Length: 354
Image (tube, rainbow, N blue to C red; front, side, top):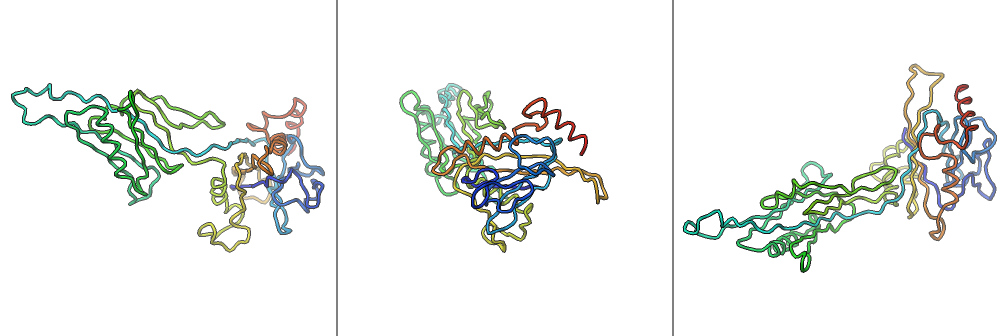
């Protein structure tokens, strides 16, 4: 099972329509977009880490009963948090080396014309489908030229290819950087790679140092070498479009089928409403035992995403809701992230009785 619970920015935990809070035994009136947590069988809702398996409820509109995750197993539960990351555009800056003096290899008496050097860059678009074009090659030929002139020729060649399918704009540096070409993708989030050919081929073998983003998950955002600075084009994480995409991937878990494409649906509540904000996403991974009415004793891993806006109202920080949520589901292995030694002992005792 794969689920997504989208929290409304204006709803506090356990918020009830008309004011007040719901209880562990009565979830009626749970406000649309509000979350509630409670231990299985308990009369009260949670405000701190649980000592035994718990449930999660999400309020729904139009008087519908809350959407319920009936049981989360704390012995196998782990939680990962992702925070918003802005989209980036692919950008590459490379230095044209000083043209090699090929003429020195040819005796003057044997020359018919001056030797010609060729320079090329291949742009490769990732994530394409079969029969979709994915490579564009830019090449120039230079005869007895300087690195700065070659850079200008490559800039003009890239710009001449500019189109909807090849959305790159190039420029060259000034003064001491006149031999450097910078090509920038017009579109945010498109994933491209570059390879250098002909007289630029040596750039490919240079030692590269990757540039990373240190978050809960570290990922490569680009690299540098002696001749190249490369920034990877990456889609935004945790914005409205990202949450909408995640919702469509989790649609089947809520029983939405025959959706064909977002917007064409037989369900009034699909696609799910997503506010135009940035979100923290908490991913819960666990598996619940199947102690009765079973033909197999397999415990199936389940994934529940909880998306909570990082801002509230007129874009003020949503710290109170985020803090309240993280008090119940701290990031990491649940059994290792409890509030106290006493709570840890209670968890162990409760787990042994389930």
